Length: 137
Image (cartoon, rainbow, N blue to C red; front, side, top):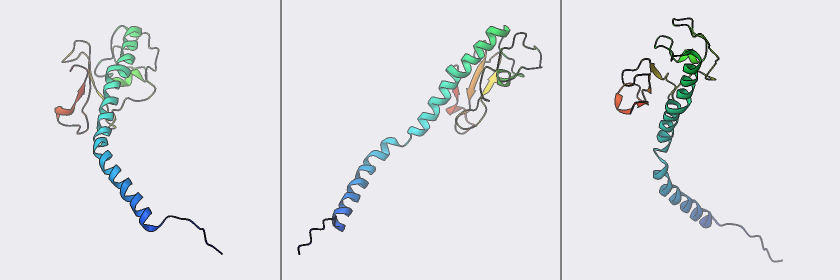
């Protein structure tokens, strides 16, 4: 009887593993750093669109932006701090606004850089200003 069992030899399997490794070595350098770029893009979207829209809706309902002391918390629950919002229709945000690095966004109204408000993330390092993501740059 003739044995026709066919399978892969160890050499063939090793060759496939080497080819996959070579392809991965070519692709990985292109993908590195993309996750940090994605986190920065999320922070920019929050600052320029998501939180900004919530702040504008708050202002439309109440006549002014939340004060610095009221902070972004005023977008989640009605503030009892003066000036108490007269027509609060919130919550304007579904959850507390945290940047992609799980730090609170910094909010100041009126702003030091803009007349209405300053809103920014301190970035990955949370200290140096070089990587800050702001609504005024």
